[in-house]
Length: 327
Ligand SMILES: Cc1ncc(COP(=O)(O)O)c(C=O)c1O
Image 1 (spheres, rainbow, N blue to C red):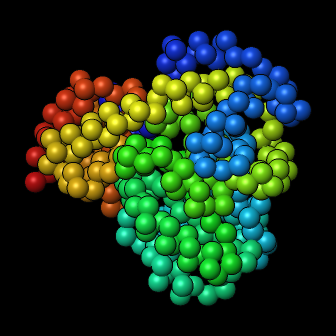
Image 2 (image 1 turned 180 degrees about the horizontal axis):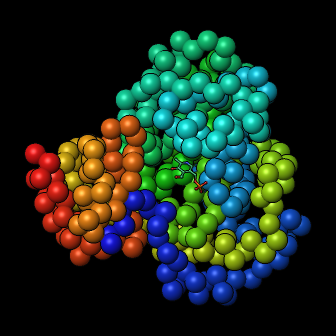
Image 3 (image 1 turned 120 degrees about the vertical axis):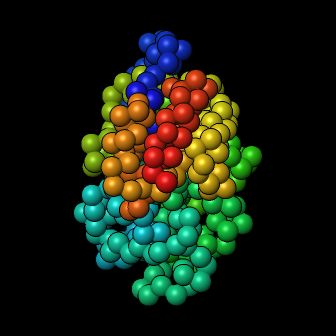
């Protein structure tokens, strides 16, 4: 089976496992894990922020960020299919008492006008911008648009959280440093268990004061670990070995779209969007290709570390057969 459901399907490589086995560790809760401390230092630098915090998942990083940036009763605003609104089980309402407000937007990118028109949006509220945007098919936020929208939220007194679960895909895809977007947000999440190939682990970056406050949320949600250096070693390994190669995933996704008669213009990174129809997922599966839901009416095929050129060639062959059956 060629598993294109998600880039979370990657398994740790032998090199990554060796780095984990060799990790120098200590008690993270005492801030004594040297490998985690080094990861946090490097991640802050990468994202253009003063400090960073290791968390087990990107969901937890997002929720900890919202808790620090907001006040109960205020709003979290995001494009309506953004991960924090639809995949985190009402976390912003449960953990931070926030009113969840989704706005419809093309390619996952609300406009300045939409931010200016919001009711009851100001101090204590948070705008979440997701880059790349998962439900729209791994689309990249152009830097100038991102900057203008973040600025519009700030002008109204709101904070800005960047859910950059796949920010390194955006950076490689756009040929920019992750910090180009990172400096424009109050807090930034990056997930390491997707294209970067780690078994788990995420980073939340922000100002030194914000990250100090975020420790409270990390404890509250049960995300304060002990020898977290085992995970941090995998994450440092990924920063050294798995970032530049994301370009290969992006090139393979483009090739898959072109070869399958799908629109390559919407392939910014490692997602291929496939118009859905009844039974399509099953027909692809019968021909050895696993895909998953993207958003209503659309499926996705996601390239990643464990899919090479041969896998893409096979996927194209199967897609051609199945999609030809469809037309
Ligand atoms: C944009 C985005 N944010 C956050 C997450 C959550 O990541 P995790 O599974 O590490 O909690 C995901 C996972 O798919 C995602 O796509």
